[in-house]
Amino acid sequence: MPKPPVPTPRRISPPVISPPVVPPRTYTHPSPATQQQQEERSAPAPPPPFPTRDPQQQQVLGGNRLGMGVRVLPPIGGGGMENGELLPMPPPPPPYFPEGRRDPPLSCMEAAYQLEDPRPQLTSEEMEEVRSIAAMGFFTPCVARAVKRLKQDRVRVVDFLVLIGQLEEDGFGACSAETALLRSDEDPDKARAYLKKVGQFKEFGFTEASIHQAYLTASRDWDAVLDVLTQGR
Image (tube, rainbow, N blue to C red):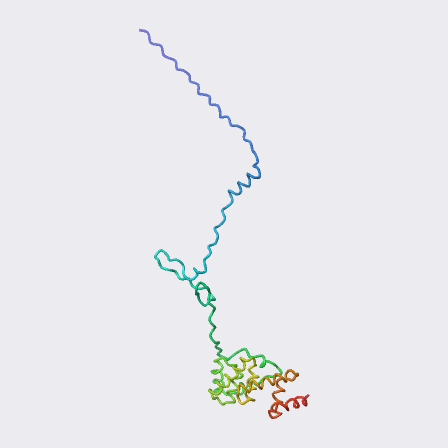
C-alpha cells in the first residue's frame, strides 16, 4: 500500500509594518496679546487684603463656638478702653529718690549765686536724717541746710522744705526760694514779694547774690538797696 504524501510546510512571511507618518512640526511665535494673556494666567493670585477691625469691636469681639465673648486687652500705652476709644494714661506716681532729688534748679547751678552745701560738716546722725528726708523728693543740699539750721527738728524741716516747693511751683529756683523765705520770716507771701523785687533789680544788670547781700546791708530797706548796689560798682 503506498504512503500518503507528506505535506510541505508553507513559509509565512512576516507582515511588513511601515512606520507612522509624522507631519513636520512647525514653530510659531505667539502674538504679544496672546503672550500677555498667558502671563496673566500663570501669574500668582494677589494675597487677600488684611482684615480691618471696627473700633467698636476693639473692646469685645463676637462670641466663639461656646458662646462666650472674648475681651480684647487695650493697646500698650493706653489707660483702658471706653466706647471703643483709648483712654489717656493716668498720671505717674511721685518719684522716689533714695539720695534726694538729682536735678537741681538752674538758680542753684549758676556760678553767680549758689548756696553752700553743708554736708561735709554734718555728723553721721545728721547725714542719716538728711538721707531720710531727701528720699521724699526734696533737693538734698536744701535738706542739709535745713537740718543744720533747725537742729534735726524733723517737723520744722519738712514744713520749710514744703514752702520751698510751693515757690518752685511758681517758677522760682530752690536756692532763691530758700533765701527769700529766710529773709521774710518763712512767710511765703512775703517771700514772693521779695523775689519779685529781686527780679526787678536783676533787670538792671545786678547779680542775684549782690542783691541779697545789699538787702541785708541796707537793713532790709529796699529804697536803700539801689544806693548800696551802685556804691559797690
